[in-house]
Length: 470
Image 1 (cartoon, rainbow, N blue to C red):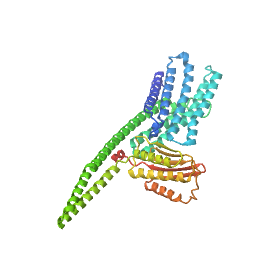
Image 2 (image 1 turned 60 degrees about the horizontal axis):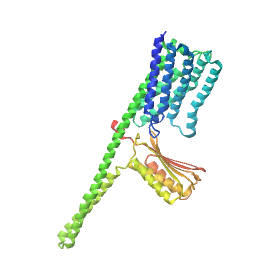
Image 3 (image 1 turned 135 degrees about the vertical axis):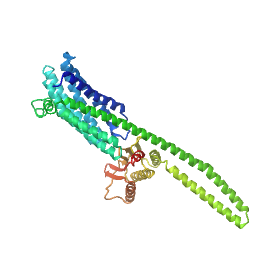
Image 4 (image 1 turned 90 degrees about the vertical axis):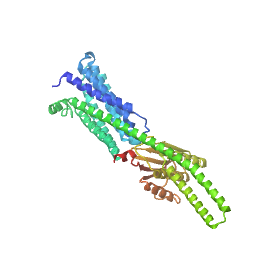
């Protein structure tokens, strides 16, 4: 049998592990404008860690015997905070899955619906029994574990595994390994905290319970939960460190790219303003000499020199075009789309909204060719919408995920039958589809009587950081 002091140590480190994870998660909490799904959802994990850590310390205070006059209150309080923490855990998992629309709203609402039902039953039981008969508290605790804690931990484990697979796909293997580890420990924690409960006279608690676990494994289930919590926290801190390292590397790379771009522009400007102008002036001098020269041999030499000067000017201009083209960044897409929208607003009365949600630091990069093709696809889609949709509102949206950049044009017009495309509209659709295929993109059209949505989804190219690892 484990002594009281041993249980105190277990609950102290159990609570400390999750509380530390909660603090670390909330310190990393960032805006929604990020490509990292974990960073978008991390505040829910932080709330779970803080509340669950406090819950274990409440249990520690209760079994220590330091607050004998408040034992019943601590039991009720700990049961409530435990259920609340499980709801936050489930919300973290759902948020991490990054579902959209109605599905997202339903999935995000489900844990809080179950928590509300559980809380209502909890309050009714408290009103009936108060703290004179505490059997109801244990039953309510078991219910919160079965119906909120167990599914919440499994949903989080599944979401972490999905994110780990996405990270592996873009060669962030260190992050992927740690996220897979977190998924394993959350699944294990879900079993230990959600399925192994106090023994009671109803299924499943009369078969699978703490007493059976202790007989089989020789140590209390709380020790297994604490070990899972420590494993989760260690891996989570490792993930945060790697994220920071990856972001720092990308900032360094972007800074170098920007500096190189400025140098190329400066070089191009100097070539244009100094070298080309000097060559041009030399060419004029040669032409002046040609006008006064009468000797055929010398005149032929002057023609040869003039041709060489023109060839040199042409080659320098081509070089300037090449080095300028290499500096094309995704911010140029935003600028060019803004110009496009501004020009269309001058010629049509339809309101056009540009929504550009691309964080400064992304997990991948796009070539000049791909960015250019995205621009022309959106331009064609916008032209088609203005000409044919009879819409009263248009939206251009650019957003990113871990693996892709998504460009969309949406209108609220009359739509069209894709199997009976109007004359003049057909060629534009073919062109957009071909452009998307050319850059390995997925081209999607959805149209109904409520409007049309044209999307192109382009996978990120392998970043320079990933190439360095090969």
